Length: 120
View (tube, helix red, strand yellow):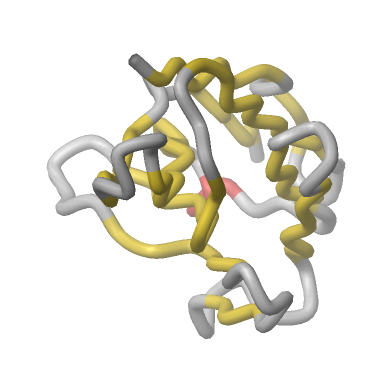
């Protein structure tokens, strides 16, 4: 079993910053790609940023230059530093982690979701 625990969400004014973190624990042989997605009310879940096991990053155009994804392989964590937040960044944010288990099975896990609200 694998658990993902997210932290760091909350309410912030436009122009402010928040840092989200996601920690993976459990039956983990290795971690592959790690990423963040978000879902605003009435909209589909969308990719925010990803970080591959090789360290390559990818960002949605809407967050480029404002958000930074990083990972700590020793701690099995992925973080999302969000600066210059806008009201349109308001959403529930989910971490997504690709994990290879001890049986060499590969599974993508989702965090429980954490609310980020940006007031204007």
